[in-house]
Each structure stands twice: as C-alpha cells, then as structure tokens.
Image (cartoon, rainbow over all chains, first blue to last red; front, side, top):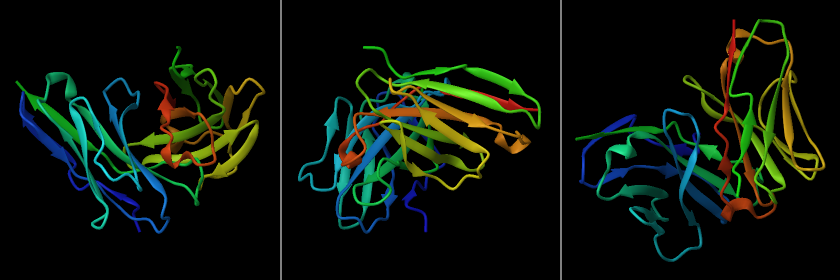
Length: 116
Length: 116
C-alpha cells in the first residue's frame, strides 16, 4: 500500500490567492513526522514545513501552513497569497521513528502553477 | 552555512560503464541519504549512511552501492550502468539517524545522470 498519497497531479492557482495541496499517509508507527518539500525546475528539494505526529497545533512557516488531521491521516499544505515563484513541484514526505529509520517516503508530487 | 553539495551536476555515461557520485553534507550533519528520482517511479530511497555505516537500504540491485567517509562526505557508485539508471540522484543530509522522524532532511541540487 502506498504510504504517501498525493491525489492532485497538477493544480492551478491565481496569483495572490490561497491553494491547498492534499496529502494522505498511512503508517502504524505512533511516532512520525510529515514534511513538505518544494522542487523547482532546477531540481533541488527545498524544505518547507514539518509536522510531528504528537504536535497539538498545526505547523506554520510564513505563507505555508499544514492542515494536520491525524484521525483522517491527512497533512494538507496550504499556501496563502500565492506568488509566481511558488510554481514548482510539491512533495509530501513522511519519516517514521521506529521503522525505516532515516528514510523519507515521498508521494508522487503535485505540480503547482501560479497564474498571473 | 554551506548547503549540501553534489558533484557533478550533470553526467553522461554509456551502458555498461560505472559511475561515482559525490555528496558533501551540511557541516555537522552525520547522516547522508541517497534518492533516485525518475518520472516513472518518483523518489525512491537508495540507502542511508551514518558515521560511516550503512543504516538503511532501499530496494535496489547490488549494482548500487555507497560509502561514507570520516568527514561525513558520501559517495554513491553504480556499476554496469543500464538505460533505466538515467535519473536525478539526490543526496540529503540530516543531523542524526535515530529519532529522525522530527528532523528535516536538507537536499542538494542533485546529479542528473543520463545513460546512453
């Protein structure tokens, strides 16, 4: 079974609007971390935001926030006030504490295009 | 603080040859992971090294190998190259292996390998 599922291959958003990128995950490990990365066309994976499985509050980092719904096993990324430079591929990833230490499992990614 | 450095950035090799890719982690990071990214398979975990020891390995054939040096720099080797090995190879560094569910991985820009 896929551990990380990103159901939106591509998304479009108007500049200055907010957009939500979906991510659901599957794990039996009680302790895990969820990460979002941005990959522009240059190839580098840029870390955006982290959410721990025991965190009570949703993570926020500037224009990025993570809508964490543990019971539904979802960790959606919300980008507010989209900018043209936000156009890129976005990956949701998970690290589990007790299994596969050090390994990040990635979703297939969502290509975000910001329209002017 | 310098980021993760991967060399070379681009590489073209012929089927049957071997190749060595290099990764220098962020100063102070002792964990180095390698990932293969292809359009068809997405991001696949290859292996992880910590303190010169391979701690975790993905589902790749033995042609893929790696090592880590005492300064935490890591190399990845692929022998007897096949056309399907054409991919973007990404290296990521983290502070530690144990309890890494809450530790983000910082990625390099990758090495784009083309096998002809």
